[in-house]
Length: 414
Image 1 (cartoon, rainbow, N blue to C red):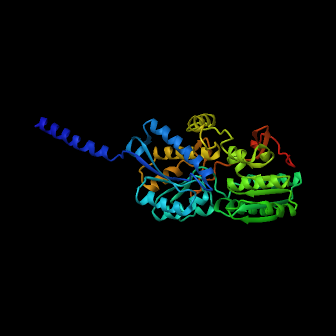
Image 2 (cartoon, helix red, strand yellow):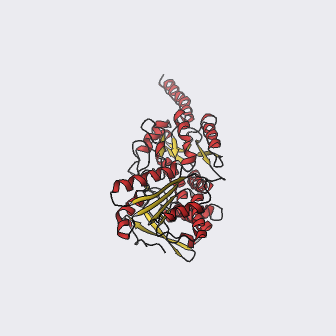
Image 3 (tube, one colour):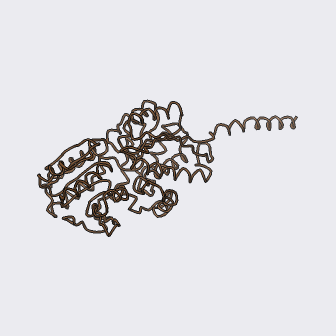
């Protein structure tokens, strides 16, 4: 009787064990978009390649550890090319959710291509892994289906710039500021923040020129002359990489010189800008100092020298330049890896909770990961720096805040 009972128990285990194992999927499906062409290719492809570097590294190790299944599971990336077109992107985001039925939805780089994903993800109750879409309007108390991983929300990103102009600027003789910006969620939100910070500072610094232009603007010659007519002490130009390239080229062609000029992408994608503008065209330009230049203490994943070496090995002979967006894509992978290792299920809100639980605790190559209640990134802050050309090489000098400064600003710029 005991023998029959034991055999029955073993038979039951034999039936149960395969069923439990079958609950674990053969792969975790990641769905993402990228832009191989068009206006946003220069920021999209580095993000895509950075994430691919992480994914291939993990799959070479057998996949990522998923807590709910207590085992490593390989990753499968389903990625489509939206060609920098928001209409195409909207169609493809829907396809990833409804047809491909991905486990994790990852937005393309930048606010423009992320903007169409926000309502689609919310309506489908799918958590949107927002890589670098920093538009403030994306994050609201009534939408739990978005989280920004790789750079700070645009409302706080330009604070070091505004603080420098309002606190140190008057000491240098900066009183009049001109601002021109592309009217999209990314740079439009930054312009609003700069305007707000300057107004609230009561520093005597004022905006004497404040003009929005279409993101597709490719000629700034007339606009540069209009800016010069206001005799500003400092000029802020906010745009995507093609905007910055066009502005800096037109500035060089016109012979106009501003004592202080800030642009975003000379810092974020320095190699790309140097290739298109030249080192001399970047000399003295103020910009953000991103995590591709500041070596943060990484407690998870590769540090900056290790990542640069891995990037050069994988993509050193390709057409995609190394820069902040390379780091951003890799950071996306690191955050997802940590979240999958701690999430209680693959349910979308469980994944969100696991990501939120990392806030203030995770330090990567990109700095300290920290979220606000709406899922916007408020960590990973970028200081203000100034570029110095040394021959054909570009050197970063961090000038603000003083706590992380590596040198003093040169004003007027050379």
